[in-house]
Length: 179
Image 1 (cartoon, one colour):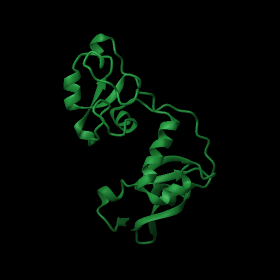
Image 2 (cartoon, one colour; image 1 turned 90 degrees about the vertical axis):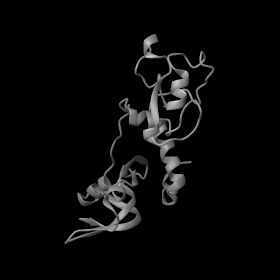
Image 3 (cartoon, helix red, strand yellow; image 1 turned 60 degrees about the vertical axis):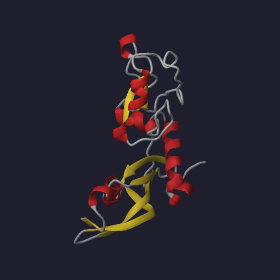
Image 4 (spheres, one colour; image 1 turned 60 degrees about the horizontal axis):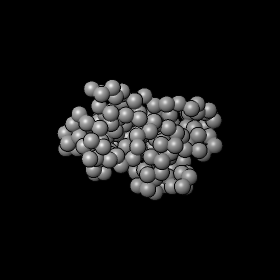
């Protein structure tokens, strides 16, 4: 299949995934959404910009897809990773509250590892290099710094709030998101 636009950014655009009951459950990339459509697992609810063609088929690029069969979504915790911490913290330094690109942020241990701090959701935050250097090997209070938000595990509530924020940019998602 070939795309009307450059493949790298085109296939990474976000697509809202709805359960069969129209409940938002996930955000995936265009590439994954197209696979679900071709396999017959999902249907397009809202089309995005552009199309994808093969010699025998042409598909509109979806913006919102709905699974054709209801999927029970178990309560699950996301793995602790740099990517998931940055997503949870919305690419915002938790000390100076400025937004950065993913390459400009580091992970900070609120309680430094040298003082027994662990690699847990509650102890890791996104932090810019300047604030991380300023805090150093101290607790935030000792460095006269405070956290923008207390760190919490990535939960279903976190996922839904991120979907709502993306819905602010994706106008055709709004009717599916519960505000």
